[in-house]
Image 1 (cartoon, rainbow, N blue to C red):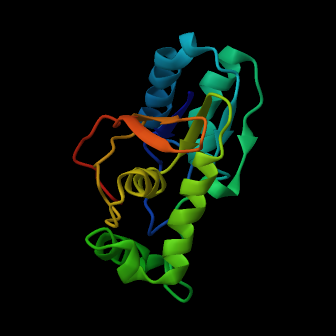
Image 2: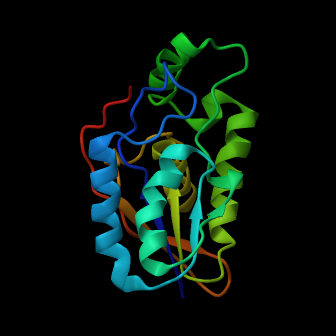
Length: 184
């Protein structure tokens, strides 16, 4: 069995409607350090991160502890906002989308969900992946056969664990810690 640990990034320094690629704020940096300490003993050596700065900064403490360079993969990026949606309107779109299903969002978003789920399903070695709230929920939904965008209210730096069997089937071993997530 292969274990895949998906970690939601630490708290970002800016909201979805004010910055395209914010880093972590002070609390987010502390959360990243705590997650690294929690996972340090795993000694997997394989780290993947979203290209977005908040994920790369969340991955950095664990990468330093393990003395590895994280692999940056677009496949685990945040859900894209629709073309033509102004920066100031992105948060309104996201909050509405989070109330619905992938099917309601259309084929481009179903393809996003399927792409990230297939990417995680393709892991053949134990791996830690630093990603995003919706992206991790997409994999949970793919595993459970649940079309909702939000299945778990994953807290910052929560760790969701999946197992992949020899035939490529994924199962959810442990859902990440939940909290009232502020979408900002």
